[in-house]
Image (tube, rainbow, N blue to C red):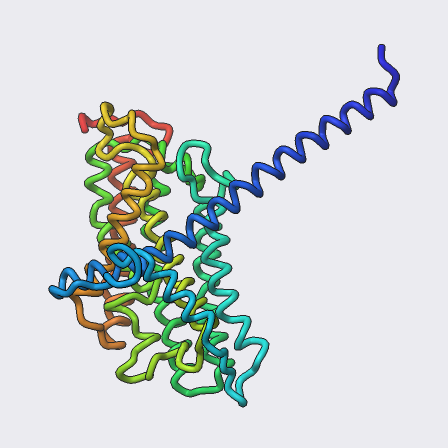
Length: 354
């Protein structure tokens, strides 16, 4: 039998090696995810300008680089070269902290997003709650920006963002309850892999429509871009920002759009799995399907901006509180009743001939 000291030294050495390997893998994967998100955000601006140009019969970016592909880098260089102007009456620390906080939160949420089976930084059992918490905190950055600017227009934009978030978070929470009733798990990988009969997918289809509208409001995108209303608020909570502080808001908005597209893909579109469960498409890597589905949701963001006019503020509140909230609440009751009636709750055998 080996001496105790040898066992302790060996176990400690083994533990240190495992910790070093885990740290190296986590750091490398994190850097890969962050760089990938930043590149995607840069070229999402290019894609949006091209899509909007196509819908309006224009050419869009086409001068900088072949087919205008270097336009995002030219825009970034332009922002870096501009002077950061801080209003004399603004609260300097909070004024500069707000865009950093908004952009950081849009990156932190990606730690629980599974890109493929096993491709996730933190496979926690409460991934859905983590995403809800992080996405809800983003509004703090907007409120901080509006208050720290010491401008009535900016402050009103921050208040609009807060009330808009409250209005649609309630409906989004009830939609996620429907998903949890079907899958029986808060883990994002288990939600993707949970079996869903065709009648269950049809049952969740109206919730997908409501969720798409809610993520438009969540990201302050047209037609729900009321916190940035140029016509009445002269730019809203970002009216006093310039240079890279403004660019961080811009990047945070697009990173949040990517995040919401990924969440929609995981909750409703099967994540990295082939569409419609088609088995012969299984040779395509899961991450390719995941990216393609995210691109489809991003096109929806661009399409709505090109086609729909901005809502009035009272229309937004009425839609959130008087239409979506009672509808989603009723659908939760309907979903629970149908799943119980046909013994289709998670862990039960689907019966009733459906």
